Amino acid sequence: MTGDIRIYLVMLAIGGSIILGVSLVPPLTTSGVEIAPGVTQEEFEKAVSQELDYCEGLADDLDCQCYADVSGYIRANESVSVPFTRSIDQTTLARRQAAEDC
Image 1 (cartoon, one colour):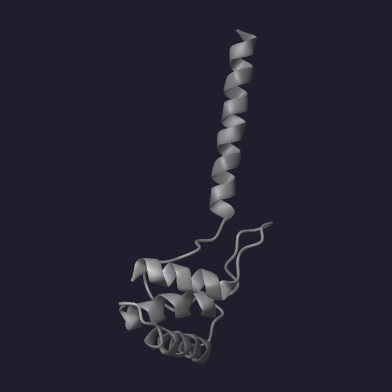
Image 2 (cartoon, rainbow, N blue to C red; image 1 turned 90 degrees about the vertical axis):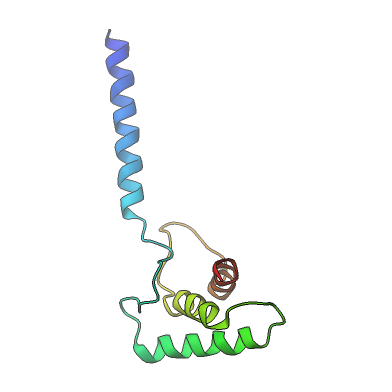
């Protein structure tokens, strides 16, 4: 009987830890193209413009406005990251995500 209670308490502690961990991780992407907090309009427009120029130079069949919006959003918001981890280059991440979405 006491073994069962210990199992339930461990399961409850693990479940609570998972919920707490997920709630502390910021969203890595969004569905919209709004400007992230802390990013100025000029920074956002510059990133989108650079990505639009990059997309137009590609031979792929992509919707360049969609590509520029998604990639520009990710590049402009460089502060998004998962705590205690290292991620790939922000530009590489932005361009891969944009290519998949558009």
